Amino acid sequence: MVHILPSVTVDRITLPDIIDDAIKAPSEGINSDAKSSETEVEDNAEKSDTESESKLEKEEEPEEPKEEDVKYAWNAPCMMVIFEDGDLDCALYHLVESLQDPFALDAVGVILVQEALVEEIEKRVQILMKPLDARVANHPCYKRTLLRIGELKPKTVIGPPDRVLPDATPMLVRDIPHKYIGDGPTGIITMHIFRTPFEATQIYRKEYPLPIASVSIWNERVSSVYDVIANMNSLDTFKVNCFTVDMEPIKRAFEQRKYSACMHRGYHYETLPINGERKIIIYPVGTIFGN
Image (cartoon, rainbow, N blue to C red; front, side, top):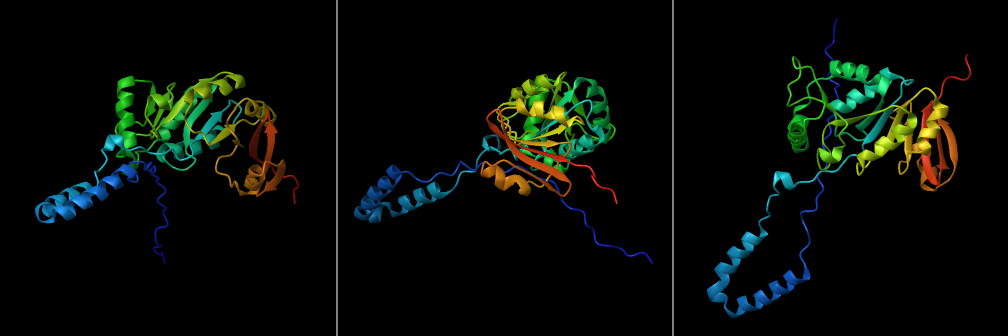
């Protein structure tokens, strides 16, 4: 007998929060004007009651902000760095998730790719692309981004035209920082190419002022990763060969500016100063003892 089970599909689509700075408290000058007007109303109550009430009603009606005036906040975007020696399959899995849900917390906002991998990544990503959720495709941030991309005409990687419509496609945009595409979250991922590890530490600076919250580095040579981390100034959280990681085991030590190293559920955590800046470094560890 086959039982029909309830759906357990989780709605994972995230939309960016609005930066609410339109509503401001009234100033002292407005309050003083209100007091003087009250005095005048008392003196001329019979003549101006109706007029003052209608004026107050109009003033109290909130003005709806125009769509182009609304500002949205970044949701702690991640920068992904893929080296030739990295686990490309795992990296692509997380990259595609971010392409489909670009406004999510810790979603990839920018990707740096070593030159030898560019063609392979572009082909594989395009095959894996699906139409965007309607809430993302119809969001003002994404719509404005499409208009701007239409003006700039950069090189892009979009979904297959036989399966994905051009106005609802995930997108990689080559060699153009977010600041030229939109103000705030854009709904797409920018992509930059590097040849050497040192070049990678320089290219990411093009994305300023993108508020990068973490870096996911994919490189099997963990020892060389520390050299890259040392040259990425102003960034403090580095996830090596991993992406979705619980930050609680190292959070307290980092906030207290203490050196700390520990293992938790198969991951190595440490926080230490590098070139005068405190960093968090996390990477998975293999099985040490067999049964």
